[in-house]
Image (cartoon, one colour):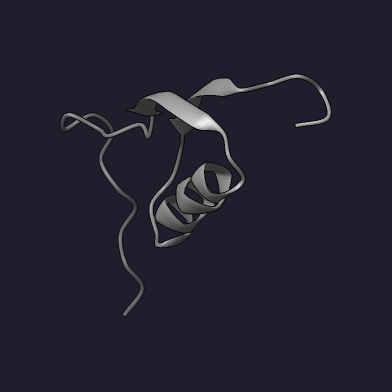
Length: 54
């Protein structure tokens, strides 16, 4: 790459299909991926969700 990067660590956040697509595109650019961490916050029965409208 132009900045001299060859190996990267990836931290992804959120849900959806876009995460996998982004990781594949970085790998296709010739970057070596050493780690992939999913840092999406998952509640462990924390706050009560709001009431749903009828």
